[in-house]
Image (cartoon, rainbow, N blue to C red; front, top):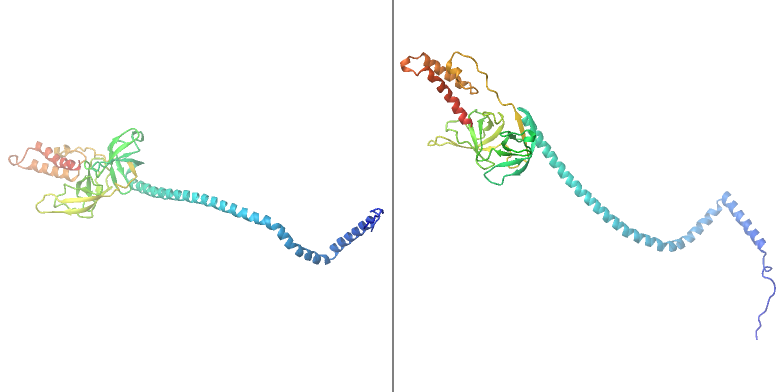
Length: 346
């Protein structure tokens, strides 16, 4: 039978005393610290120890770094998706703004052109937007956002950047209705800018076509002639483009030629027009003359016609009484030519 030995000696008394061990370790530590400060010998030892401990550090850090990478990947994907959505929204808004800027640029260009075209004769001008277009194919009328509160009046001239657009037909408090020159019920006195021949342009119900029904076969009207407003009647300012002649046909059997023209204004494309106020030509003051025919001639007619009338009256006055009309009949003859011209302008 084996018996275990029993040692009754105290544990503290066994081996090296604790005080001596502490003193030895403290001395070694101090010596290592002094050596580390004054000498570089321990750097090599530290490097070896770090190299040996690096795989252990990687193994310990691997789970944490893997988890951080996975979480970062998912977070990065979500962040990129959110940024993509934000950038797509910003790009869409930027494209909308860019389109609006282009529209504003075009509108500014049209307004500048209209303003420059009306500066010659207009003493005041305002821009009006087209709110509504009449759907009747033969009634070419539009509703404008300017009315009596803005000083708009019936018969006022309406222009665009290229020429005469029409005139105000009806005026309300805040809006007004304008009739286009292509309306079948509209007519405007015009003349050829090349030859000066006066006539009347009538609407056809087609925004791309006007007709000149009162041009005789002998009139000097050619294809390509620019038709401008005459200013007769005091409705439209003189010298504004109205249309360009596109067709001229003359036959020996017909008294009047077939003449068509294309309006200068963009009647079916304008979104803004110009309402203008201009100084209408004033009639010349009466001049006291000895010739009764000249004194009774209506004012505001062309000078060549009263001159011819006065010459005819003078010739009648000097002719023998049996072969000439009375002097009192001269005034009606002198007024006949201006009346015909006025009828042509209406």
